[in-house]
Amino acid sequence: MTGAGATGELESVRVTRILREDIVLGRRPPGSRLIERDIAAELHVSRLPVREAIRTLVSEGVVVARPRSWAVVREFTEQDIQEFAEVREAIETLIFVFAAQRHDAEGLARMRAVLDREIAAAQRGETEDARIAAGEFHHVASQLAGNDMLDELIGVFLTRLQWLFGQHDDLVAMAEEHRVIYEAMAARDVDALRMLVPEHLANGRRAAERRLRAGALG
Image 1 (cartoon, rainbow, N blue to C red):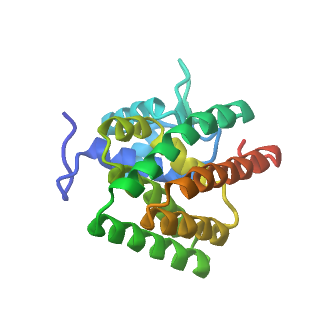
Image 2 (tube, rainbow, N blue to C red):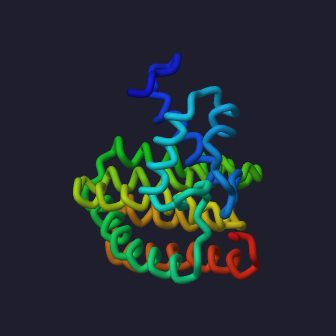
Image 3 (cartoon, rainbow, N blue to C red):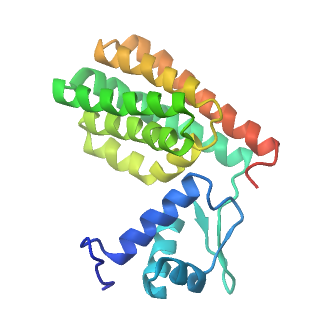
C-alpha cells in the first residue's frame, strides 16, 4: 500500500488530487505528457503513487494511457463534448430538481456559501478559484438531491464536468447563471429548473466547442 504523508492522506490520493486539479484548471493542457519519473521528482514521491494516480485519472476519462509510451492528458473532440453534454443534461437536470424538492436549510446555506465564493472570485478575476467553486456548486447540488444512484452516476464523470467549467471565459456570467439556478432551487421551482439547467449546460458546451475550434484544447 502506498504510504501516507504528514497529513495522513495516502500519497496516491494526494498525487491524484494534484494532477486532477492541474488538468481541470489547465495547468497541464490536453496532449501534455505525464512522465512518471518527472512527476515523482516534482512532488517528492516514489513512482508508485504517480502510477496509481495516472491509472485513476484514466478511469475518470481525462488521461489516455498509451502502451509503450507516456500517458497524456486527453484531447477532447467535438463528438466527446456532444456525447458528454447529452448524458450530463439528463442527469444534472434530475439532480437539481431533486435538490429543489429535498433540500433543508443547512444544505441551502452550504450552497449559498459556495455560490457567494464563486461570485466573489469571478468579480475579482480569480479564475482558478471561480472555476473550483463552480464545480463545487454542482457537487453540493448532487449531495442535496439525496439519491445515491445519481450521486454515483455523476461521480463517473465529475472530473470531466470540472474540466468543462475550465473552458468558460466569462466567469461572471457563469456565476450569474448559478445564482439564478440557486434562487429557483431555493424556491423549489421545479418547472423553472427544467428550463434553466439545460440552458446553463448548453452554454458550457458552447464555450468548450468554441475553445476547441480555436485550437485552445489541443
